[in-house]
Image (cartoon, rainbow, N blue to C red; front, side):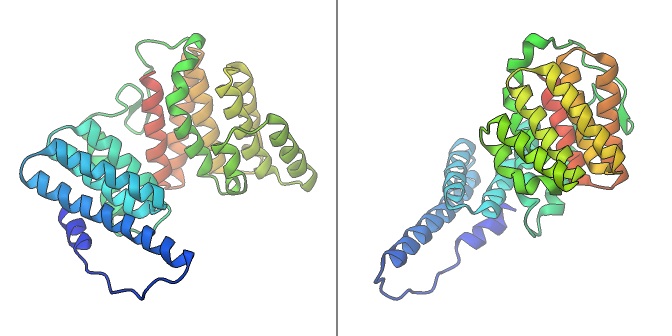
Length: 299
């Protein structure tokens, strides 16, 4: 992957006509930023070849920032892939897995030829590191975390809300309400959208909005309320035979159960979520679910 990126970074660009408008100058700035990011990749490769891993990673992370600012998600994912490769080569496998997961998340919305390769690396590392060994065993959840998490530990869930939003975002019906996941939205606005979906008889959208409501309640540390809302969403998805919605609901119910130290529901729901994702052969959703389960188990 690293060598391929180096080749891409060395491509010459055709000469441009003299700029004569603000838009032209903005395009030049954009192109120069992209060129700077590509040069940083080239520098990172050279540092790596000189065994200066620290400097190599620093350059790559600067490139990520530039690609992020430019909105070039696929190129950002390419750099995340390289960082994962470096960590893997230096035997920092958990760090590698973290970057491969980030890369895979970005690749999901692209046609990148590397999607299959990064997925294979994620699965291989998860198996090698026995990721989810406290939760997953032979296709399902059979054990609970050794140290139960109490409701007072809800503050520790802050770092996994991005992953919760991502798992809800995997449902097609959530696309219209993506901003509700990413921004702080008043619950009244979500209720209004829910009532509108109810009036239209759009039950799948109602279920998705309930998941978003539950997410917001969980963020506000209303753990029990979020549990009730997630269960309500699950019932709607069951009624509509919406397997993916059921899987997401079980996953989030499992998260709440973990926070409430409800061992029976931790096992049942995490196991069911993984089984349902496997049933519909959604490998990407399964991988995101497993990552979320691991994040929760580390709270």
